[in-house]
Image 1: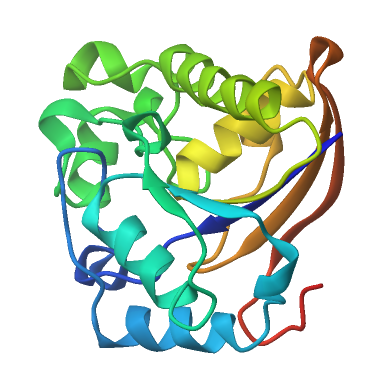
Image 2 (image 1 turned 180 degrees about the vertical axis):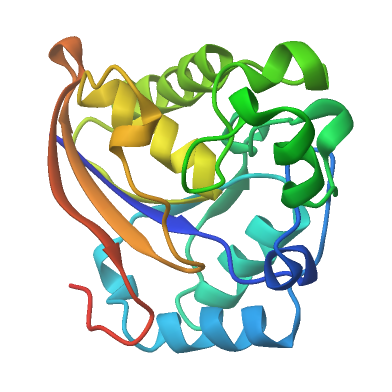
Amino acid sequence: MTEITLVRHGETNYNAKGLIQGASSDMPLNDTGQEQAAALRGHLDMHRYDRIVSSDLLRAFSTARILNKDADLPIEQDERLRELDPGDWDGHEVAPLKKEFPGAFDDLGFLTPDYAAVANGESFSAVRERMVAVTKDYVEKYPEGHLLFVSHGFAIRALVAELLHLADVYQVAQMQNTGVARLTIKPDELMTRLVFYNRGFNEDIF
């Protein structure tokens, strides 16, 4: 059985301003995001993990490097862990887009699958497929491994939804910046157990 601990990156200025932030917004962590990642490091048992696998986007990889500061674990980047690419809407405010395209947003202001056609964006199913593909590769490579994945809010939701056979990503809540989830996965058919979801950087995580 493989254990995968999922971490969402720390805060960026786009997060702070409530802007849509996807795969083509390669934003750095802001000061708060760096502080969040450092705080999380103090609450993670980094000796638990065999390696770190991170999205190659700056905000995720910077978070991974901060977490790895004292642990010196093997760390690698995989672009399949990137955030959803929202196409023309990357970096835009939600409110005016929701007013013009109400069907593209849910009641919490998050994108719905209908957004992709009008924004020239990546489909939800494409994100689910690539997130499962990267997970499957690492589960097969490290069948008894303890892995730390550093990724993004929607990407993590998509992975959890797919592995738990949920029909709609809406069924999985958004994760806070530097929120943490943990899955245990059996290689056979990726049988998955959700151990916990969205623990914060001020909680001890073992």
